[in-house]
Length: 411
Image (cartoon, rainbow, N blue to C red; front, side):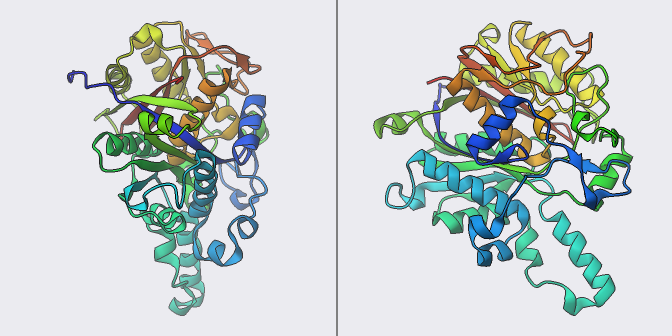
């Protein structure tokens, strides 16, 4: 294992959320804490093996961003821009307050612009090359969401996206912390976004057996840790957090939602889509985050689990948590409410973990009716639990054996 590093404390001073539970932090947080599932039958997926999803409700890009900007950018960037604006406004930073040359933007992405590629490919086949939008490439290129946020905010620091499958958002936050540690930035706007709800994406996920096929009960389909779980429910979402050194945030009197103290990342190097059954990569990432933060395993009060509702992932994650942390941490997965927003998941769940630390409220794992008897941890279900939390971790794992763990504490 690597040597422990000097402690480094990063304040989370702004949070923006656009999720299937609602647009904005108040609505998203309320829906997630209520434990109300959001999955519904999706007409755009009709006829597929899995024909339901978790979409962001009532998202009016024209109203939120203006018609001109909304038309210019892809939906994954629309979601991210709304979240970024909310996060920056809540942080008390922005033009005239920060040095724009010292502000970075790092966003996690997975399958950006796939619905647009699908749409424009159909136009190409049906109507010829002159029917294809000239905006397609700048809308859908993997880096563009970070570029669009920088343009919108008028900031000039490091600007790029991270691609680590369903760990992308968490990796973006961990990378942002490293930019602050290395002195390359004073503020980092970081998070993740995904809006890939189209037939070309959902069909192969369903074919490989990753998605739930409860087409007769979409709302009950995502059931992390339940004995009857049969796969995840695909979703869209965006989350953005404003990161700055704790000393800087304290000096300007900012509200600090939580402190990001540890980050660990690893690879399973095992299989493209199947997690290492021994959980060795997950254990390495979790142990790295603990060592980075200088926190003992027994000090962790809460885990916001990756908890996808797939049989193998949930089993491996819980076994690894049990082995590394013991059995005292309270564990939840919000994917029973939000579904699985792929690259955005790590950022959404990091935001929720920060809110849990700030409020002392652990959201419930929705649809967890009969916990799998093989998953021996204290799982929060039925309703939110009010309990003081001092130390929490947020887990994110993805195809390719990508693992990322963020460790946070109360200020």
